[in-house]
Image (cartoon, rainbow, N blue to C red):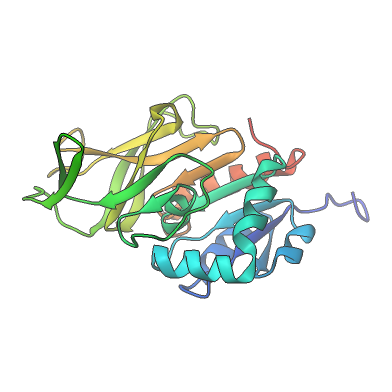
Length: 237
């Protein structure tokens, strides 16, 4: 408490040097928390939780974080038990790699990688071949779509809701247990066509493929719940 008022949760927003974080910062403010732009490892000492925002290219974001020392700093921050939420590109960065940028390393907080939407995987012995086929849906996947949350998702909304997407790559976790929500990409969306992983959760580390900051009240509610749960000692679960 400060002057009779509760101290607001300070949520760091990592700057990769790419993309626009204004909408994320505005959503954090509307959720009742204080957004803090984070560029250097020492900036993490002033925040209790962290958001990896969702605009830009995997390789460039990874390189910028490597050069600034933020990559190792974010991993240590997450390993301390503090809450971390990855949004779109930020969710993909939680994993090991991305087909978008071969050779670039993610944070490795979850095992797996990101792959191009609509590409099929063919296996011939020890060889893996990725090909583009007729996906049956538009790439990039852009617009509002249904997200079906599982009971393992700690930020509420279990059962589903519509959120805004814009992406060409999707996450494939090595451990299916981290999958906390799925979204169908076929015509009509609801139960049609292939499904992608649209949210992940493992302890204090969360990720969403959609953009909650662009998803009206549903998205703002998710950011608010993240801020509230992070404020409870900075940990989730």
